[in-house]
Amino acid sequence: MEYPSDSRRIAPLKRLVAAVALTLVPLCGAQAHPHMWINATVDFRFDAQGRLAALEEHWDFDEMFSSYALMGVTKQKGGGYADKTLQEMVSPWMEALGDPISHYFTRVSLMDHELPTVAPTEYSGRWVADSSQLGLTFTLPLVQPLALAPGQTLEVSIQDPTFFVAYDFTGENPVTGAPPPPSFKPFRLVNAPAGCGVRYVPPRELDWQTMARLAEIPEDADPESMPADLLEAAGQLQHRLLLTCG
Image 1 (cartoon, one colour):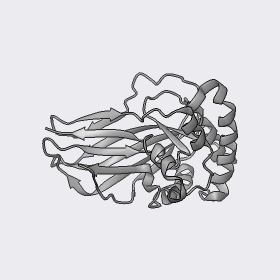
Image 2 (cartoon, one colour):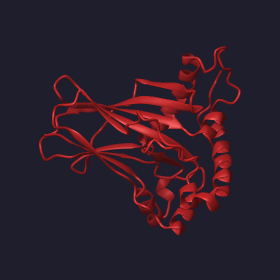
Image 3 (cartoon, one colour):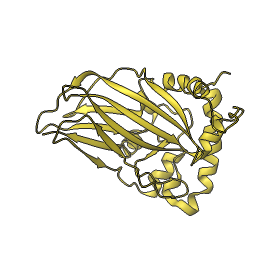
C-alpha cells in the first residue's frame, strides 16, 4: 500500500482540522488555533567521549491526525498495526520533513550559530494504543559530535514556522487537557557527562488578534511569502531546550 505524504494527503487533512479547530475557539480561546498537535519529547544522546552526538525526537500526533493517517489501514488481529506497515507510512513523511524550510521543524545552534545535522536514517512509526495516537521517532545526528565547554549553551528550537503544527512538551493532551502519565519526561540526557542539564523555555504567549491571523495562514503557505510581522510572531512560538555542561 502507498502512503502519499504530499498535498494529496495533507491538504485535505489541513482543511478538516482547521474547520474543527475553529469550532473550538469559544471553548479554548487562542489555544485552538493550531491545526495539528504533537506531544513531543527529546533525548539528548551523547557518545562514548561525552560529546553530544544526536537528538532523538519522539512525536505523538493528535487523535484526529492519527485517525486520518490510518484511514483504510488494516489492524492486526490482536489490535495495533504491523511495524512494517507503520514504517512504510512514515518513510515518505521523513522525506517531506527533510525539506530545507521544514528541516524536521528542528534547529540546533551553539552560541547563535546554527549547527548542521545529518538527514535521519533511524526512524520508525509506532502506535500508542492507550491514547489511540500515531507516533514517530527519529534520530537527528549532528554532522560533528560536540563537546560542550563550560559556559557554552546549545539551543534546540522546535516549531513549525507556518504554525500549522503546534507542539506540546507538557505531556498533557492538547485537545482534552488530560494529564500526562507519571513516567512522562519532556527530555532525557542519555550517556551525558556529569554536570550536564537542560532547561526548557516555553513559547511566548501571543495576543488573540495575532493568533487569529496565524490561524488564517493558507494550507500551502510558504514562510518566505508570509508578512514579516506575522513571521516574527510565529517565531516567538518556538519551544527552546537549552543544554549546558560543566
